[in-house]
Every structure is written in structure tokens, then in C-alpha cells.
Image (cartoon, rainbow, N blue to C red; front, side):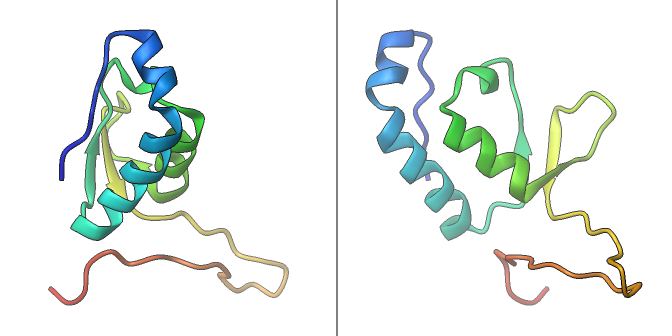
Amino acid sequence: MSFFFFNDETARRLLAERLSQEVPRGVIDSGCTVAIQGPRFIYQPDAIKDFFFRHFQPYDEYGVFWIWGRSFVKGARNRLEGRFLAVRDGL
């Protein structure tokens, strides 16, 4: 899996739709469970940022390392409810 990271804002804008589809699909297909958010993360298309915020949880106090997972809160019936997409099977 490879991703494009551009310093050029025009290139990021022109490829935003393509990257918004390819990056999430690549993360899931590869079984990626750890992400490092570098300084360019804030410049990624909103769809990519939304994907990471939905599927990864911050691991360190600085928000650099993110681990695949979800947080759940007990519902009204004192149960945890929600869905979780597992990108890896087994150990």
C-alpha cells in the first residue's frame, strides 16, 4: 500500500476525491492497525480525516500514534451498543 503526500495544495485539491476513496480502502485492505499522524494530516481531505477519527483512537498523549479501534459508551439499558469493523482476523 502506498499513499501520496503532497506539499503542494493544488495537487492535494486535484486528487482529493481519488485519495478520499483509495486511502480508507487501502487501510482496510492491508489490515493496518496503527497510524502516525504527522504535520501533513491536517491538510488531508475531510473524508480521510473523518475516516481516521471514526476508526482510530489516540494512543499517546500527543495524538501522534493512533490505534485501530472504537470507544463505546453504555446505552440506556446499561449495555454497550455499536458496531466495530475488525480489519484483522485471528491473532
